Image 1 (cartoon, helix red, strand yellow):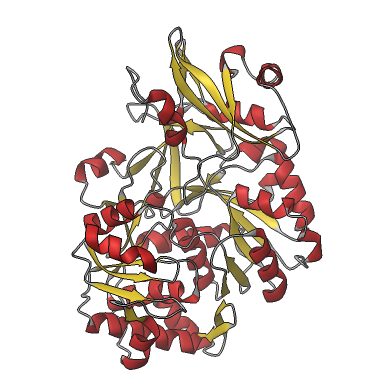
Image 2: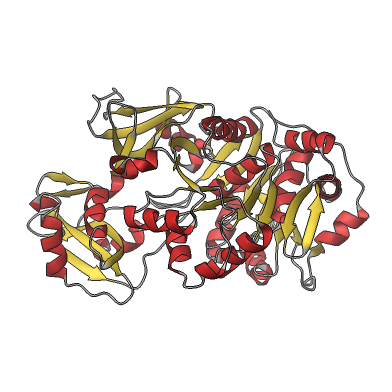
Length: 515
């Protein structure tokens, strides 16, 4: 399989079908394929060779779509850069992956001088924004207009498609190497699950396109001959406007985005009845949020996808039907059609159903490895099984329940406390909008359970009231011994809580540390 295969199929079947919408810019399949072939030709003319890495640092747009297809058309390797990183982090990823050609838009063009200072080997910078071309950069549209289209290399199979850097929720980010087969396996597996896409509809891309979940959703749309509609970045106003104007049928959101949408007072002013499928991930959705979301989008099914970048990225799916069983709302789902899931002990022996262990996954969606980190690769992938670092258990029907990142488990007084269980209890209090539970140093217990809480708008609650609330739902040793109230939790680009940032003030300088 190869990523650009869908272009030839679409060109053969329906060349005049709309393929992308970005603001007032609408392009058909035929127009898109021509531009992609010309962009590939332009990159080749600039000295980019098959196997070279080409990066992009940009908000969502139709040009991001063209980049994702033109680079493999040439046989080169994509490297979508995390737009939320600092210049130092961006330069680190470019340097480590030896990415010497980079596309930037209006939002990030100002970072280029600093990136070049930190990474002088950055040879080619292409401006793909809509404003005036900055000095020292090449112009995207000029390159396309002046370059001849080249033939598709049809690179595919186990050839490297891209280097995708992890969000770094548990440490320094690593470059995950994924092949064409990896991404297409995950894409076709999700489609085979039959729940996550309406088919032939209009997809809205509001989650950041650098993240693999968004890229997989985009790949689903390619395979299903959908129309890709892009907004530069998520905001409730932009999403609601796009849904109404462009008759959106399918969306990928993280639960925090869902909550922001349903909390927006303008939601009733827009016609959102056309939405058929909402695919979400990064974390389970609170039952109260799901109930309100179903009311707000009455014709939509909700599907949760569980996985990670290293799994291209999907391993399990929780279907819309599953969401009608209250007990399953905390589940990650059952293994997707393209892979196997097991729960294992530290010696990699499968544990009995209902027993907590590490979630491991096997299938053709498992990564090729980490860029230039053979030891990390060997540690993570053993006998074909990707060790996720997630602690969880499987019930008698094969549903997987994630209880914690293994590094996020709190050991207090010799007892294991899984933060997800405590967070779920906290979230049942009506005054709590969001919560994260971490372990902090304690002279008596080694670690104590500590809650970081975001309050719902207009609500108040005391630390003692939260403890009393939790005591009704969980064992006493799991109840937070301390709490703090914040305006917002630190989030990764994937919408996951960065618990290492929450732990840092407590563990810096301590005798022991949790990374």
